[in-house]
Image (tube, rainbow, N blue to C red; front, side, top):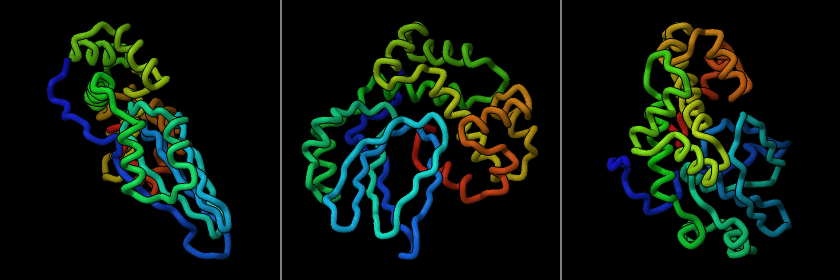
Length: 232
């Protein structure tokens, strides 16, 4: 097993707040897949706080926040195990106080070391250069962990509901999309991130993010969002 993965004393990777900039109408936010689930508190005028845990995203989506509404979120590390029902019951009626939330998460959410190690190994394999197949890279990650590929598959399916290939390809797509902020040609970005060619990268980024590489390159704000903490 890998021995260079640090202990994770808290499942919280980052926290965020959202609110429409003005009072005239709703605000839409583009949410890109990041390998994380978020604990979110949604507050509407005159209503009690509503707590929920987001799903693991397979593709980008747009979330609309109505005027006067706010949301506060705690992004949890990839692979975090959450006792969702117990966590939400413990937060019922609570305001989004950071100290309270972190205490509840300490009680009801953990990051299993084996899962963290597995995702880290796949991130390493997914970020390497060269045109290696996903099967080869998953096998290499399993070898790095000292387990069989089927063992890695069972571990991640049980812990996250996603196979190793999901984590491998998510990391590659996020890194390739961020590279679009530079001056390299699309063909060079595709080659550097292990895609067979530019068309392959275009299909993959379109599936994950709903935009072609050209469209992403023309939208630096969205590319910057892909630098937010996540599975990388």
